[in-house]
Image (cartoon, rainbow, N blue to C red; front, top):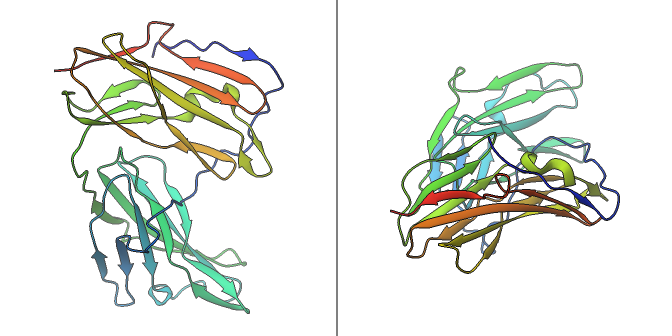
Length: 260
């Protein structure tokens, strides 16, 4: 991976001690998100389309678990997108001393094509049990609904397919690439990452490639519509509320993608 990080400190940049991800997302105000229901009879039922880049509701019947229910127990779910790091979300809570179900809302990344889901129960005595389809997990394909190639900036820069004029291309950017500006305050991420792009040296466009998830910054996976041209150039800038600036620009040469 060739990238340049240029750091300007106009104030103190605090390190973010948090490094864990969690589920979440916005969703439609009318509550019409698709739902995956994990029913008591151990069946799974999907309502609506699982669209990459959109939220999904996870409904879990707590009767699917029979072990580890002695005292102070709870159930968590885990979602793994395209074999990446699992994202945790809660499907239970304690209300008036009783454990009751919670419908979780999970954001499906625009860069993803598949999700594997499983569940874990535990109690205060250290008991653990799993609902994981006998270790195979519950597998669901995601509808990319017209999204084109994914330009993924993780440990390295990879491209999932060709880019054509008129395509909606997803830009996936791992905030760990520009962690020099990482920091949080009051339990909220106090930094962000902007992507800059231009075609054939023309107008520079900006797009937010990160979003806050509590004190942690995660990939926002925005899509950009590619205009006519030959060369797409991209570079990235991190900023914080303390005046920290850092750049990921392939040593000033920027990252280039051919438009076919």
